[in-house]
Length: 235
Image (cartoon, rainbow, N blue to C red; front, side, top):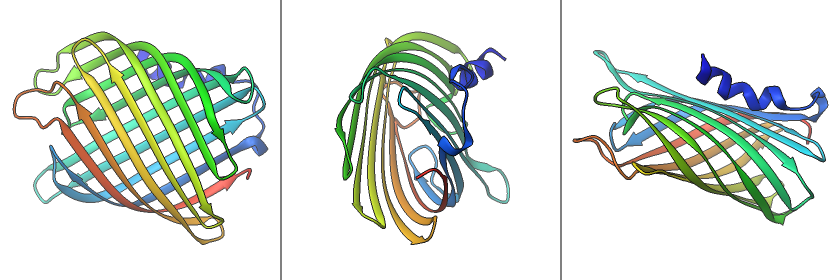
């Protein structure tokens, strides 16, 4: 119950929202994985963003589930929310909560709460670049024994977006969370191409690494997906 509350807390802290200030994306497609599981399966993701002069809230969720004739071969779910408070157009403070469950990765379940400072180096229109530094706490459940590990972490992150043309966009995000027992890093690259109206085709590559994993578990997992997505809300 406490973890579920922590995941939605940033949303509850946001100011009164107006529907016209939301924008979002829903996507589904084919995903291939390598590392601790080698599969082809269907994946889905959902992103939602709210933006005003002082506040920005980003919510995201992903799901991956694949079963063969005998058993599940891949199962992973993530939920994340980040609330930013803008001091000015370049600088902001953030509060973030991330949760994930992965039956075939280096760790079974992980919850992270962090806060810190962000700076916008590029603000568009063609190029956007944010960098963040912060600290927080991480609760991890190991894959092999189910043991719970609690740790303080330092966090570094960055997001880059290049609007190549009216019909194509490239984005790159990087996140590193380092604690005494493990350093987790994730890099996501995505290229989106407009098909018609609010419908887009996208291809993305994700690499995730844990510095310390249980025996017989690979440190790095990669995910390659091809999706169709629909965007909605304010432009």
